[in-house]
Image 1 (cartoon, rainbow, N blue to C red):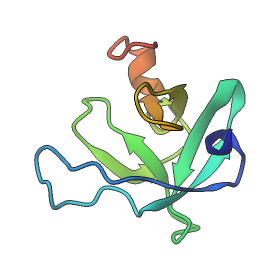
Image 2 (image 1 turned 120 degrees about the horizontal axis):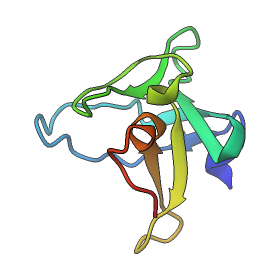
Image 3 (image 1 turned 90 degrees about the horizontal axis):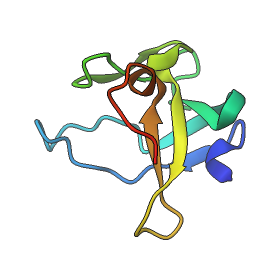
Length: 102
């Protein structure tokens, strides 16, 4: 529920980047903006005039230059094996058929 609460600040657990493990993709804490259908966008609360997190169409690039389109929107799904953990799925990739829903 917290992850879909509009305006919530959420702590992300770091996941090493497969290409450059020392690279930090996220700021650690993100602000959630709730959209329709349990979809969200994520922004850096330290950059109030910055963009939103987006996953590029090729899936190899994540950055904070997103707007509110499908590449910057995420679907929240329950994760198995981790108490309270969730998975975020890129709406752009779901719509392009490159990801699957549970």
